[in-house]
Length: 165
Length: 272
Image 1 (cartoon, rainbow over the protein chains, first blue to last red):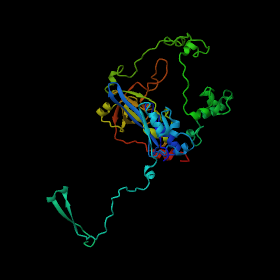
Image 2 (image 1 turned 180 degrees about the horizontal axis):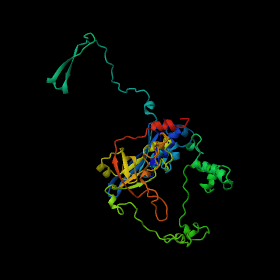
Image 3 (image 1 turned 90 degrees about the horizontal axis):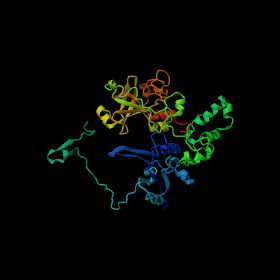
Image 4 (image 1 turned 180 degrees about the vertical axis):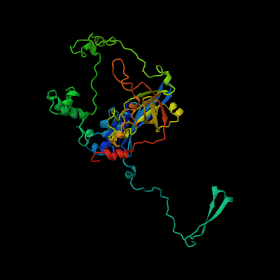
């Protein structure tokens, strides 16, 4: 299996400038309403006293392909290239995980481009599953309902068929 | 110049400056054959070429400390600060020469809880305007879909406690007004502002709208400058009271949300 790549983001230094957001849209030509990466603004909310939580956290979406075209040519993904705070790194997850140990307030993302397509057709792994048998059934003109599953309020409801009309 | 600037016939600021400069004052622009030389000089002090800087995207210049000791602050290369006396001037000899007050001073704003307490009943909040956003520079970039999308509507920032008291919910359209005028902006509830302060974004207009009279791209609908009076200036004659006025705010039941698809259809690049 080929090496897994990801984005390591040091969100202690993300300023929320949105350069990654805009450069990604330019690179992939995504219209308004579609993004490859976005920046989540968490705060400001009070922790206690004068201490506040106020973080900007960039996160790749399901339209992030880690700039496959660029990285194939040995270039960085466009968001990493344009990050004004220099707080994003692209690389093999193994290397990034080691870097991640060096300081707190970092996040490692491994995005998947269009996951439904990437996963392919659904194949069940349940070996015990069986198909329904083809058995003959008879039609009736009413069905039984039980409101809230209380047996003493069971009712019979007539069904009008086309023939009745 | 680069991909981000390239749209239709548009020029970057630098290219436009050079072109206009070459027509109006050709003698001052003789040394620049093209905008590369202009930007190398103007922005990079000829220490670097724009084409090289471009590849690096961000450049941190080396920072020197204690420049007053090494003479790096003064044109004559001598130690000291770049002032007539060579010292840090808390008493400005230059202002004194101009006949101005050489010392720092404080003036209470013309309209404030201190100077006009009688207005507080009608206008109980301090109005500040003009905080910078990443998407725009003053009135620029409202027509660039990717920038506009970061901040589609004109925002008014209001403290959660104040918003709760006035019945304003996050994202609700509000009217902000004072004795000079009013503007409609969308509430962003945030602890970033004080309970007694209202912050409004400035420079708003709507390039996707009709530009003919009387609409004029909706320029006056959400324009916080409607609330800012003219010629109420400081002692040195500079500025305007953009950050020290009084105002009131109330929720309204209109929805003036920008339709981003309309902006996109109108202003996307030809190749998009």
